[in-house]
Amino acid sequence: MAKRQNWQLVKKDQTYTISELGELYSMSRSGIKYWIKLGLKPIESEEKKYYFRGEDVIVFLKKKNERKTLKIDVFKCFHRKGHHRIKSDKVTLLYTNVILGNKNTKQVKIIGNCEDCEGIVSKQWSERKLPEFLEFYPGIKIIKKVKSNS
Image 1: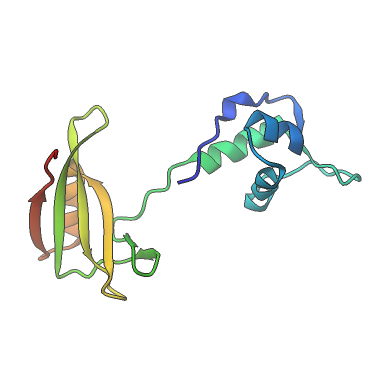
Image 2: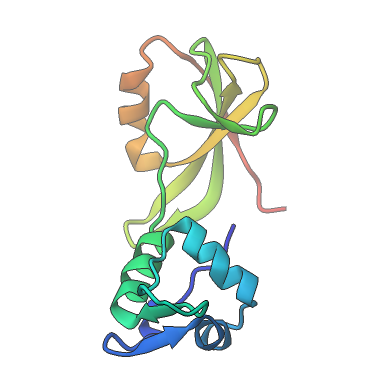
């Protein structure tokens, strides 16, 4: 997973060059240029040098740092390296000992087969949200397993 950059290092009312941003975030010039491909907008300049408004950098980094959650019916497919739906005949619920947030809910890993390629798909889910998943897949056969600490 990509590193999340601290947007608070940037001053809103300051202008930055690629070199300054690279130094601020310990990144190479090509890393900052990749941000441009991802949507960071430079200030229009007649020179070949890029300048960025601090405010634009902050907006870009906040958006880039957002967690992307998969929809309830979309899983990560390990065979085809993408996101696919689960085959709705049976799933395995692997109860982990990971506690999520301050609500003392355990994490559950939902494992099944890909609807497209029969490969393994999985997603990490909150035990508290399991009824929502089960409502979406009525009649699904569930195999429960508990992951030990060892």
